[in-house]
Image (cartoon, rainbow, N blue to C red; front, top):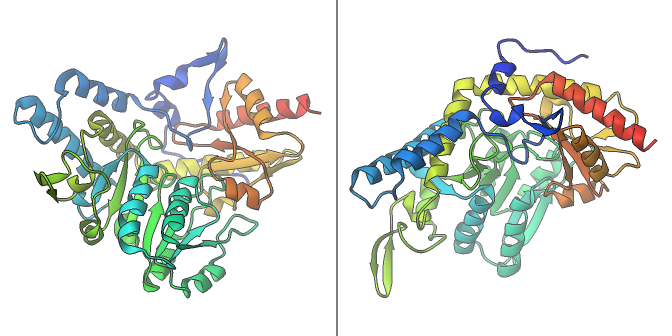
Amino acid sequence: MAAKKITGYDVNKVREDFPVLTREVYPGVPLIYLDSAATSQKPKAVIKAMSAYYQDTNANIHRGIHKLAEEATYAYESARERIAAFINAPSSEELIFTRNTTESINLVAYSWGRAFLKAGDRILLTEMEHHSNLVPWQMLASELDLELDFIPVTPDGLLDLDIYEQQLKKGPKLLGITHMSNVLGTVNPLEQILLDAKAAGAVTLVDGAQAAPHFQVDISKLAADFYAFSAHKMCGPTGIGVLFGKKDLLEKMPPFLGGGEMIKRVELRSFKTNDLPHKFEAGTPAIAEAVGFGAAVDYLSELGMDQIERHERSLTGYAIEKLSQISDLHILGPDIEEKGGVVAFYIKDIHAHDVAQILDSEGIAVRAGHHCAQPLHTKFDLPATSRASLYLYNTREEVDRLIDGIHKVKNIFA
């Protein structure tokens, strides 16, 4: 069935907001950016907001009482409030600024994990996790003698939920799970998965790095104790992410880092921690990046997450339809009904790096490798895949150029 084209979303108008999309990467070769799962491009609104902070309001936050410090503090905390509202979090106090999703997950592992896990406890993850939601738990398991279990991935790229139900009977203390796979594009049915985990007594942590940019995330509807995502994948700057955490858990957790700002009182041999969220934000934070993050969620909200999701679903369906017609090309992951805007594929007898390099000569930016999901590639007996990831500014014409580029790859290796 042909993918339907949506109406009411002017992608060409959206593209005008992104200066880099007008670039020629080689003389006469315009950029076609299909690598947003790695990092998205930035709209003028985000660039302008960060520039305005540095030009007009640059100061450190919270401690100063002069005009610039007050303005900077307001800009920083206002961004936190808008990001909390973007995911419908109960309170901005439950939103911790970190460097990225990776640091958010590490914060949970180091602070909550060290405080509440003991030898023999089980951590349940999935085979489709990004390294960011594998390695921190492997490190902690080695340190504390924990057991790691994994929900298997089926051949069509879905989680085996029957085995999951059996694993819950072993009493895991934590479930760590991605909302959307950065390789398969699988959007996991989290509402029921998390409810089942909570019923089994597990704390739940969600890697939302690939979800928050692409469809509406409503924390109030998820039984997630922790939810992590990054600004740079959702039109915001690099170097900043957030960890949502339930207040009762965050209050019981020890600080992740020590220093300024995370304290309420310090003596020579003791200290008292600050209130949430500052307890977990030691030192001068990424203030300009927080301002940019706030501008990014404003931009996404103005476009409308429902509109963005519909555009991406239509475009992804079109891409799958066209790619499926190419001989010896195999797409990973489920059908479009259970998939986001990530299309990882491999071509028989052609290495993914060769595919990406030839596509680059046509101005087409895709990712090649294991995408920080090496165990998943091992599961499918693949050394690497090529990945085209679609976002709110991509078009059908760009998909057509991708198809033409892949035909060029095949002709070169024929």
